[in-house]
Length: 133
Image 1 (spheres, rainbow, N blue to C red):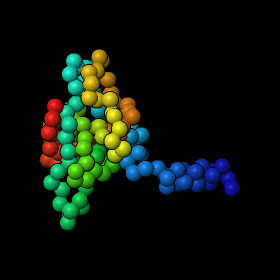
Image 2: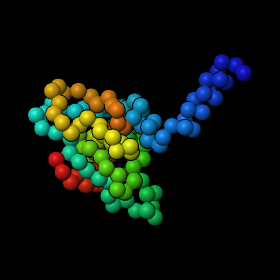
Image 3: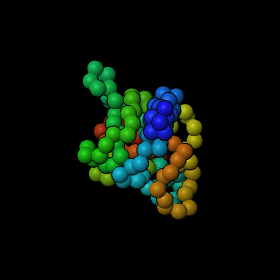
């Protein structure tokens, strides 16, 4: 097996065992999600709502604020997100399917792009209800 074939095989094998959504946290965004310095929580709590289960049933998480940006993940009704910014009708979100802390619920000393450990992207505000923060 050539080096190129081994590399392709390794990537395929890794993606088979990668938890759903984990790829999104490593996906390069066209427009980064910026967490602003704040003495309070820099992000609000939200939840995905109103998706039609008889339609496509998912909310596209995009690499930037707008339809022209590529999809990096999908979210479904009831999934929790942190809303960390807004550009027009698009929300900058941070989320985790593992119910782990994302580090956006306590003060940030400096304004910086979010780099993890959770997934990140942009989603249309129509499908996210902000319930705290």
